[in-house]
Image (tube, rainbow, N blue to C red):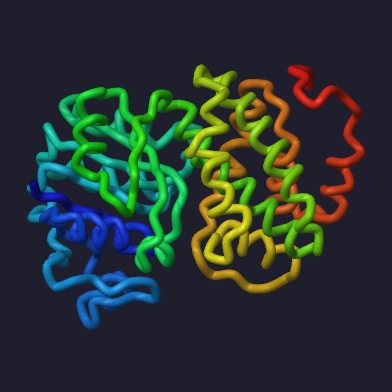
Length: 322
């Protein structure tokens, strides 16, 4: 089995390392002008991992697309442009695995929907999501993740082929819920970081509870299973997103309220904009997401936004009302 991983950032390079580690024939693709790719070519290292010599590096897109499985790990907002680039090549009948967490802002589509819109119908598409950090996986700390797909045969095939003692994969049963849950957990991560920056970390328990509840409402409104929000795609990923020192989204939220620079990708920043549009379209109450949006895009004061959350009208904890 030949596997190509497109995207040599933190997560893409880890996935390539992991698949090589479990015995797959892996090529990591990067653009020639990418600083990440240049560094791997020169040293085979980044700030997190060292790639073994058995793992091939290539900047020849045509060549790497000959693999049977194409794993993609790029920013959610650049995913569509990558797919249009892939259209120039014959990639029919390939297995496509998406390892990003986000919602496209302009279309408000889940990433599997973007892929279905552009790729050939013969391509089968799956998503690989769930908790874990590169730094912990690299030093041998195991975790559980999810693979989901409309294609039941593909799902079973990937779980069987990709599982190991380092990552235990579960079969996803709700593609809508899993993709929405995975994307929105990054928004909650930004809120968690804001609490840390404001010295209010003890509120993270309430954030987790109420954040999961509002995400479950959106999942249900969009046709998914609301209980998916309580699985590995969302609540199960909170430790890695809401508490971990390695969480980019948590760190971004903390930096935002303390006026510190943060130069790494925090996908939740973009996801907040997309989710606010979805909540308006589906008329779903999502006060935490709205507060994150207000701070990120409207320049609202984070402490005032927090006060507004506490001043909301009193209601039953699990009410269905707005």
